[in-house]
Amino acid sequence: MSRFMMALLATALACPAQADIALSLNDAHTVLVQGNQVDAKDGRPDTVSVIDLKGEPRVVATIEAPGSVAGPPFAVWVAPDESWAIVTGATKTDATAMPSGVGPDDRVSVIDLSATPPAVVQRLQAGVGATTVRVSPDGTLALVANRTAGTVSVFTVAGKRLTPVSTLEIGATALPSGIVFLPDGKSALLSRQGDHQVAVLRIAGTAVTLDKRPITTGVAPYPLDLAPGGRFVAVGNMGRGDGDVDSVSLIDVGQEPFRTVQTLALARSPEGLRWSPDGKTLAVGFQDGTTKVDSNPFYKPQGRLMMLALEDGKLRPVAEAPIGRWSQGIAFSRDGRTVLVQNMVEKNIMVFGWDGSALAARGALALGTGPASIMTAW
Image: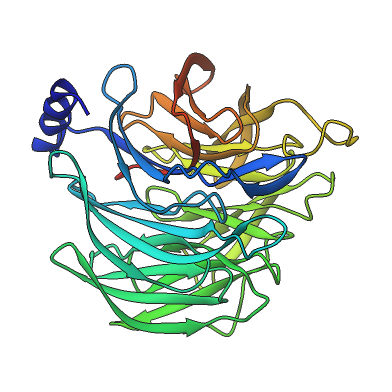
């Protein structure tokens, strides 16, 4: 990294109240070939890119850390003061994993963002297939969903470091995927793609247990995100991936028992999903057939970014724009006026302007490797 970029990053992180960064976790070991995820075979390391969102977005630092496109695009957590972060890696290059050459991984990395340049300061293990990572509202507990292991890893958080505490068994075929804490920190939701339900986790100190009543949304619930204000959780239901329309659900967590209040059939494979900072808009990225081979009748050369307005407890589509192929995570700038969308095939992050009613394409950030998860502090 150049001295200019190091100085720019140091300035951005020196004043947390004024900073505006996103972290993109990039999978260099997985590529899409004829509709199959296989090893890239070029030996390049996975990376994390620090993106300055003040003004026109730009990458100001890139460091090496294990990451993966497997799992929802929430394999990154950023501290509220933007001084540190956690990333996970669900897969890695594995020559014995035939025929793809990609096998499961369990690595978790803690990154010091206040260092110049940013650096990995702790490495540890969760469960096999470690994907979504979230930290409790009070900053004392971290949960990691382990898709392959069928578990959730529980860590305590202190001094910007993690300590393993326990492992919650979910089920070998459950494919635990997305996690979101609720505002009081006493409950969390866990999407279970494999058995088509959203589980409620009850939390008392470091003890995490499963509530007896799961929530039903749609087929293969995957990414989860909590709206600012804490009343609603959005869920992307990935379906069977076989050409049929998929859906987005809205869960009301403002009353017990938590319940699904809306499910919208919109397009296919809603993997990217993120609320705007003001909680008025849900951005959803639909892969929409872009991972299929060209000869597949459901193939499309572009995905779709759709903006849904939250009005009177219901979601309503208000705008959309074409995006790239095999799209992953979505992020908003702190003021909500800039939207980032990750595209694995193009190895870039598209930039859009958003004024609350219309999207305006503003180019793309070329990364040279596949952006697989993205997160901001808000």
